[in-house]
Amino acid sequence: MPEEGVVVTWTRLYEPMKGFEDQVPLTLAIIRLTNGVRVLAQIADDQGNLAIGDRVRLTLRKIRAEGEDGPIFYGYKFVKE
Amino acid sequence: VTFLSRVYVAGVGLTQVGDRWESSLSDLAAEVGFKAIEAAGILPEGVVVGNMFSAHSSSQEHLGALVANALGLEGVPALKAEGACASGGVAVSVGYTMVKAGQLSSVLVVGVEKMRDLEPRGASLALAMAESAEYTQFVGATFVSLNALLARLYMEECGVSREDLAAFPVLAHQNALTAPHAQLKRPITVEEVAKAPMISDPLTLLDCSPIGDGAAAALLVGEERVAEARSPVVELAASTIATNRFSIYERDDMLEFTATRRATEKALETAGVGLKDIGLVEVHDAFSVVCALSLEAMGFSKRGMAPKEAAEGRFDRQEGEVPILAFGGLKARGHPTGATGVYQVAECYLQLTGRAGENQVEGVDTAMAHSVGGIDTTAVVHILRRCY
Image: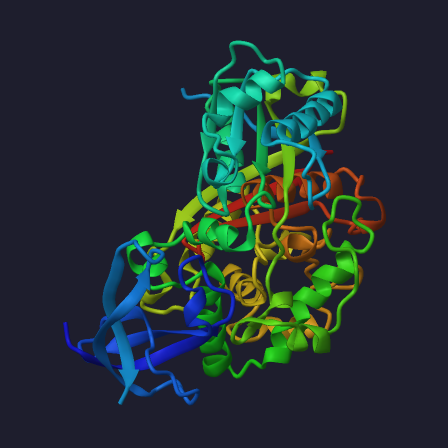
């Protein structure tokens, strides 16, 4: 899959699920990759200026951790270019 | 020759949606089940239970037998039907099919959900189970956040404002003021919706249906049992289920609710009626944006127009051309997920038999109930018709 795409729509979530409390507000977006495939992902390093049509690039980040002793989950997020 | 029975609603039972700490899943189901049986004066030969997440909220599965037992219906066939927030609608549809096929001549459908026993973050997780565990829950997307993504896209592409969307919650709260079984009985304004706490930008707390416990029941009978009914009956003239691609980002056009469109078209065809014949729509208004996109998919409004038409009064209960949410809908009657689809059918029954009290829509002969799981992922449409 391509690592670049554009923001189709986005939101900042203030009432998260269990395990995501430390990331509030959590920025989420639907991204259209350069091959046309759409994915749902978090936007990392949101500076508060995200807009529809922004170009974003894939990055590997920590998604969440299950407590202090539990496993750490990694996955893809996107950052604004 | 295959004989297909007509299907009728012979009695309903409702309880107020809200904080029902004193009642278990089984208590709530039995309360409304007995009410429906008593109203109809007919004992059911089978039970179908609609529920979304009792395993999560009450550590309880095996609901068919549990509810049948609570009602003292020894030996009857009983099962649970599930379709996320459409579970109640799916349960009615399963009951309809059993009666239609002539397998049973009377089926009790009970929708029940206990949500308030979950703390808020747990409720968020339970609701997110309607969406993909792998691709949605994993990245931390709650169900509200997915609807917020849809709302921003709708506003951007259709020139709809945040205030425009507020017309639906305002209408719902107005209609719930006089509804005995409603959870939220207070009027709200467009400004209050816009300024309420932000849950997931652009959706505020007042764009979202509340969390509550509730249960509703409907006793369905075939035509050979109608003469025994103690209360007036209403024909369940169509019951259809359709599905869309699972998550919104997989769809070619995210703003087109194809499951709702397909289920509506098929239901109208089965009942032999047109949109113009529908005098009341209990639409699945889980979120303001979902109410708008559903009315547009059904064909009542053109794309992007439903919120403005709502603000102009087109969907009002008294004077509107197409009354919706006569008892407050999901937003104000409440949305105890697996029970909601049965509440809608029971409310249509009350309207069509002239028993809706202060919430009566005048002159309604045909009503439509629309129940959705996920974001238009599963759509169930029922058409109910007055019998003369």
